[in-house]
Length: 233
Ligand SMILES: Cc1cc2nc3c(=O)[nH]c(=O)nc-3n(C[C@H](O)[C@H](O)[C@H](O)COP(=O)(O)O)c2cc1C
Image (cartoon, rainbow, N blue to C red; front, side, top):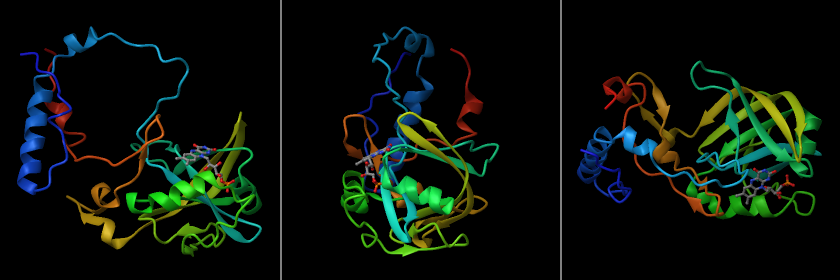
């Protein structure tokens, strides 16, 4: 059977049982998905566009001349999830005010806002610290480095020590060593073995290439597990 994965099948459902049913349907569709058929799909060349998404929108934080400043970024990355790496990178246009603070203090923060913070997040991305004081938009707190301001209202904060920086035109890339990670307790769920940040509760903001903000959907399969049933059809 050459069933297609119909995006209509996978819509966010309100109740637990409706969600379970939806996930079940979606898994059935995946298990009958024919890779050979997919390999015949026509590809459209889009030009040179780094369409790597979704990643959550972040607020990059640094103290500039002694005051917190936050800059919205639609991209950032970690070096590796498994094996785990304690280093992440952000890339911010060279003209950005926040960059000055990162270099002054050799530290910065990555703050992950939830969808409720979308207005303030967007504002930090359209108004520069060169023109307006953004230090009072959020409640800032400090961790062990004492120089990297973090946003209390954001569910997740990474406190980073600057490890390396270099230019990749038109941006400056900052590689940071994460020295501590903070997660609001209401965003944590008991996992199989550990307490874990719950992506559903964090509800991060996703940016699409047509400049729209999106929410994430539901979990539909278990990583490091669903692939064990794969057989080439
Ligand atoms: C949704 C969104 C995503 C953005 N992504 C980036 C980005 O990836 N890199 C970047 O340099 N600027 C990005 N910007 C623009 C900066 O946030 C903007 O230039 C900001 O004013 C810089 O703040 P600062 O000068 O106070 O550091 C983005 C803005 C928005 C609204």
